[in-house]
Image (cartoon, rainbow, N blue to C red; front, side, top):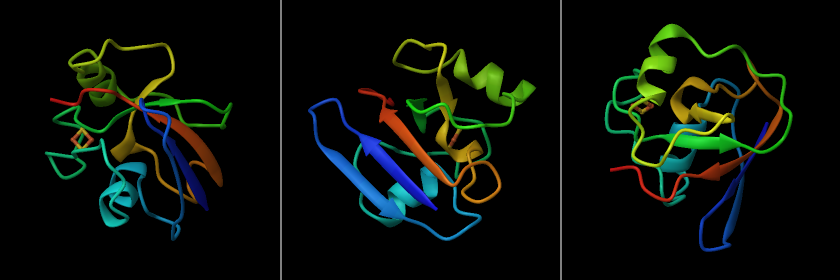
Length: 104
Ligand code: FES
């Protein structure tokens, strides 16, 4: 699977990831800036805020994710998701996300 990260300054990172890797973990593992992932992927910190660009067939936002998305530093958008809840292979084969400008 492939993840493309678009940064607020116009930079773009594209990474190939193994199935089972989240959008948050993939960023940390590949030194993609702008994603913090403070809680380690438990939908408890909202520092992995991304906005999904492509119309990927993603699972619905869970109740936990929904609550955390109301706590993002950058204002929540309709396409906002927690990067830690989006899993390569399970949820998408290719995804394009805008990294939130501020995570903390
Ligand atoms: Fe904490 Fe995603 S890493 S909510």
